[in-house]
Every structure is written in C-alpha cells, then in structure tokens.
Length: 450
Image 1 (tube, rainbow, N blue to C red):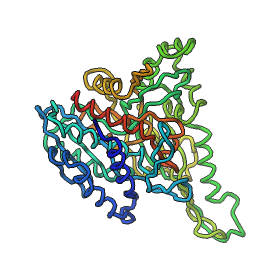
Image 2 (cartoon, rainbow, N blue to C red):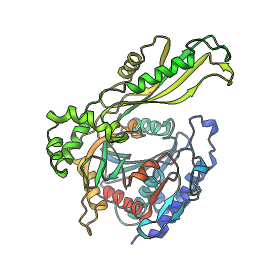
Image 3 (cartoon, one colour):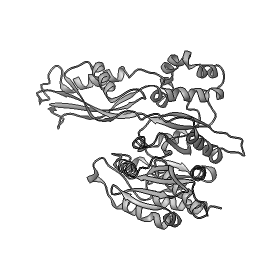
Image 4 (cartoon, rainbow, N blue to C red):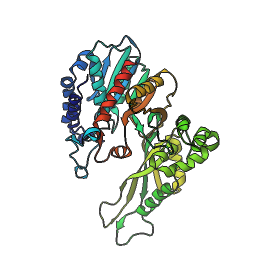
C-alpha cells in the first residue's frame, strides 16, 4: 500500500521551493529551481534508477522510461515554475505549504498546489510506485517537466525539438488543462471530466495613441489618453462574435443525455439551437463566455511619466485568446475595424493561432477516459464521471507538442470546486489532500494502460 503521509510530505517539500518565473528572466532567482531539480533523485530514488533523465534548456527535465516498444510513446507533462505572489493577499504564507482543516476538508495551501506542481508530483508518485515493482510499460513513457511554462514556454519547445530530432512521435500526450467539475454547463450536475482536445490561441495587441505632449494644466481637446480610452471602450462594447466551435459542439452532445428536459433536447439538437445557445451562454459567466467567442481584455496601461505631464504616448496591451477557427490575422483585422480610429496604432507584439484539434474518439481517447473511470470515479457512492471534450481556455506547454503528435490532451485530474478554480493565479491557491492523492491513481492507471 502506498504511504500517503510520506507522499504528502514530499509534495509539501517541493511546494516550499519558490520557483517563481518572470517574463524578464534576469528577475528570476534560480536557486529554488536548482534545489527543486536536485531534490528529485533523493525523493524519488526508484524513478531515477529506472528512468533516464536529462536537463533541457537549462532547467527543464525530460525523463524516458524504456518500454517493451518505443513506438507511440506516452508523454506526461507538467511544469514546476509558478506565478508570482502578493503575500499580503494570502491568508497563509504562500510557500509554507500548510495543511489547513481535517479529514476530507484538509487542504494544502501553497502557490503551485494546483498549477502545476500538483500534477508534476503526482506523476512522480505514480511512477515511483510502479518503478518499485516488476512493472514495465508496454510503450516508452516520457515525463516532460517545463521550467518556464508561465512565461515563454521555451523549455517545452526545446524538448519538442529534441524529440523531433530523435524521430519520437508520441501516441498520447497529457498536459494540464480542464478538471473534474460540476455545474459549469447549465443544467448539468453530473461530475464532468473536461478534457481539452484543443486550446485557444493567444496574442497580445498593443494599442498606441500619440500626441505632442506638454503641461497637464493646458490639455488639448482630445488627448492621447482619451483617444486610447475610447478605443478600449469600443473594444469592450463590441466583443468578438459568438459561435459554437466543433469541440464545444461535441461537449454539449456528450452532456445532453445528462441534462434535464428541455435542455436535453436543446443540447442534442445544436443544428437548430446552436446560434441561440451561443448568444445566451455568455450570460452564465466568464468560463461559458470564453467557450463561445474569442475574448479580448486590456491588461496593461501606460501613459505620462508624471501626474502633471501630458502623455506623448498612451499605450494599452490587450490580451486576446483566440477561439478555434479564428487566427491572429483575423483578430487583428477585427480589432482595427472595431476601434475605427486610424490614429490609434494596432501592433501585434506576439501571437500564436489556436492549436489543432485532437480527436475525441479512438484508442488514445479511450485510455484517458478509462483512467478517469478507474481512478477518479467514486464506486462507493455510485458517482460516475462523464469524460467530455472541450476547448482549453488558457494556453499550456502542450501547444508545442502538437507539432509531433496528433493526440494531445489537456486535463488536470483534480475534482475542483469553483472557489478552488478561482484561486488559480490568485491568492489562497490550495488543493484538498484526498483530491491530490486520487490524482496519483489516475496517472498510475494511465501508465499501466499504455
């Protein structure tokens, strides 16, 4: 039997290392990253005896577990960098990894508990358990652990380049993504494993307005800041059009049998009801809105260097997440049309189109769904989890793997409440201990089935 207390202790030790990434890598303190990498052989000795390990791009990790066959290997992905914290916003120290509560409510509070050390450590626990037996995987198993997913994703790209050079074509790739949730789709109360078969593209558009400048005591009739504000307001009042992309159509078709009437009929007849659903769903919150349209939001603003100085340049960074079917080029054209002001420059700082769509049928998909059923469903209560495709709303390192695999899925095998999901990239990130321990079983069963 696995020693759950020891597993939790290892998890907490790794959570206590502040592996915080920054877009400007000169701001990164690399000592915790080095300490994280150095701790793994001590914490997981059998894994490091059975698996080959190499360091890629300075700090990312690539493991290979030779199987009976090298073709169509399984790749399990995670990342160990975390986003920065504002410590005064947290109820508990963000890197203390304290356990709060008792019994089923006991939870580990720490940055990275869900995103994404939770999955990384669960993968290592699963491998350690199997490596300690006579088990040998039927196919090669790779573990790809990135060090800068939250910023540039260069580690994962380097891993993909390395695997491509070696002729490795994974048969199944699993990275972070959707979770086991309830109540996300209106009318559907059954627990649902949301497996991302694609992810939205991501781009940043810079909006820039310019003027001559001067003293703020004598402002012009329409200063650059006002012109920029009008452009942002127009983009907010005229969001991208709604539509139902194929993976979202598959989501509703899968969940239709589990919805009450008349929603069962509505979800099952999207050829008729799809346009109406697409218009209604944004009213059910940000997640549903993001499933049916490309989203755009201004995230960074800059203007004058002083409070009594007119801005010669007013600039806004707009984060745009592209729904399957849209592109960086089409989104840029839409932003320019909506702003309708030739004196506001629109420049794409960086962008990537939505990922290809992986199939939600076939043997790789059945392996994922089988691990959900065997490890995450609660047989004692009769709770069955419905596995369904959907579009991953955020970007992940898995987007680089679509260049070498047609079966890339995004799923974090946690049963998460809305409050727990809201804590991602925010304060008080936490994971319930029992939920995390159950995740280990998912990876163990998936490896065994591969």
